[in-house]
Length: 162
Image (cartoon, rainbow, N blue to C red; front, side, top):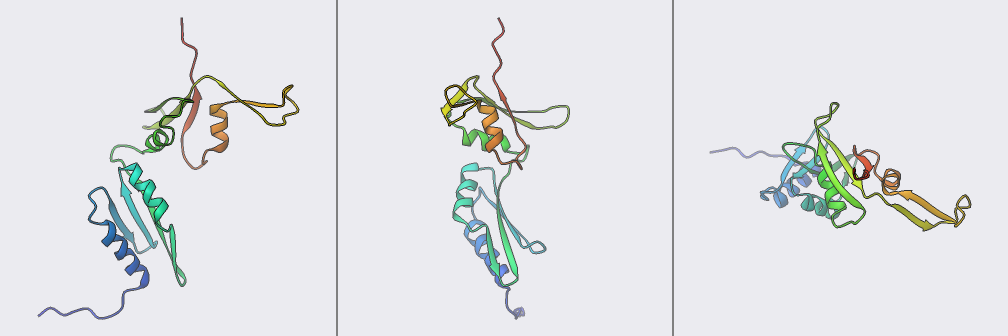
């Protein structure tokens, strides 16, 4: 006869088991719990599924003095998926020319977001401009608004060579 363990599961362990029970059977997902850091990681190659989970799951859950963090990560066995994020975010956007992931002398994988060669212009009370407009390139605007913790390179199309 097998002995049953007695005792109580901590609430953070129960919480991790709940997420594993909900998502552990999904063949697109990998669910792991790190008890040392109180981090539950849900990974998938399916960018859309990860983005949806990020929106519907609490990123942190407090249990007294213990806070569990839930991380939803896009995984790709061969490379980082920064390019996939930008391809998803800019799908159908007419300002983007191309998004490439290439090896460079400094890195095995660099993401380049190349914008079309055009000036974006809108009225902005800019007294240094005769018409009061803001004038700029998409790459400069993107540098200003992008999450600084993501490693990505922004550029503009070059002139076609004759």
